[in-house]
Amino acid sequence: MEGSRSALPPIIQGIDQLFGKDTPAALIVKTVLLHISLHVDDQYPTPAPLTLEEARLYINSNLFPLLRVMMLADNEGWSLFDPETRSRQRQDTLAVFEKVKELIS
Image (cartoon, rainbow, N blue to C red; front, side, top):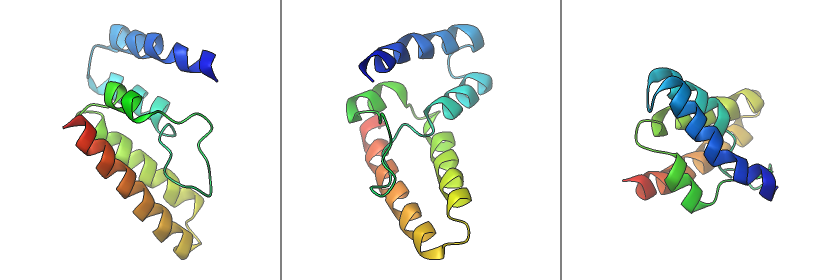
């Protein structure tokens, strides 16, 4: 896992070089890349979650709303017919994103 983690900075830099920093295309690609990078559900562990420091480095105020919406939509898709799980996951996800919001402000 450490090897894959060390690959992230050049991938992020490459996205910025290819599409431009914080352009719509770069933000969409980063959203797809990072949408399962935050640990939001103890019942479904994230294989290699970003640390809080990494989240501060890679998630900025432009990416934040897209990433939050993507995570919420992804969770909804997996728990659409299980209202109890869906509610729990939504609350847990929103709580994690509040922490990230504090980190990046």
